[in-house]
Length: 359
Ligand SMILES: *Cc1c(COP(=O)(O)O)cnc(C)c1O
Image (tube, rainbow, N blue to C red; front, side, top):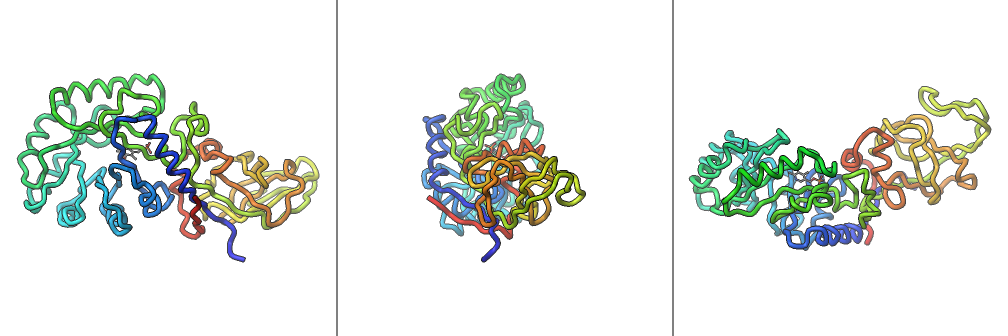
């Protein structure tokens, strides 16, 4: 038998989440964000299933190339790029769209071939203070862009929100106002909203929404559990019990002997660990489904194995299925128990873990 740690990618759930985004933003075009290997789900399989997406957003040329190699024909936006002038021939050849966020990128455009006008998005820093032109420089940057033969005439405008996952947040209100003010009168398509803004800030929807996390069935907002929002988890991280033992009161479990049995009890060992992308900082008590029943992780995760308290699943046996997150156990909950965010868990290194597709 091969190693039981595996990831199941439910493509029917992906499609359903896409429709949910459509409902939330019915008049907008949808740029599906598939950076970081589609948040760890596999960029090719995810993009192929999103035939209805109006565009894809990626972080770099290599990711865009993977999409084209997978047969994707829709527009692809390099959300941070180009990074250097030597990328431009490939960007033009692959027919990619670019985001211009810094004056450093202007000379790259001057050096680009003139026979292919690149669709260009001008990124504005309305308060996140990561990428983008300051509001006062937007008009001039747009004029400058229009001066390059390699830039298509219909420049689009975009910004990114820092804390849209907090309903009623004052910074978000200011960012939306700043964006409206500094782009007033410009005839252009506009894009502001990530997943959190799609859910909670309808005024931010503009012409294009840019969902990432929602497509994967995960809520960006702890106050809005994914199931309540009509989302279905696309990734299920699963494995099996490879050992079940009865331990005695006072026995300790795992590295560092950090967990002590409070009574005689059954303890299971699961074939999955941080070498499969399970968070090493998950605390004792982090839920795990054993035969569909909630049980608690105990001790600390090791590279290949996890220990689980089986007092809630006393009939569990070697070979029984466990779910670490996904179907029946939201990854948001695991992230919370590990002091991180679901994005990080989804993107975890799963090179040795088997992937299956479903739906
Ligand atoms: C990653 C990213 C998104 C998607 O964010 P989610 O929170 O996953 O929806 C949208 N826009 C930009 C610019 C991004 O970098």
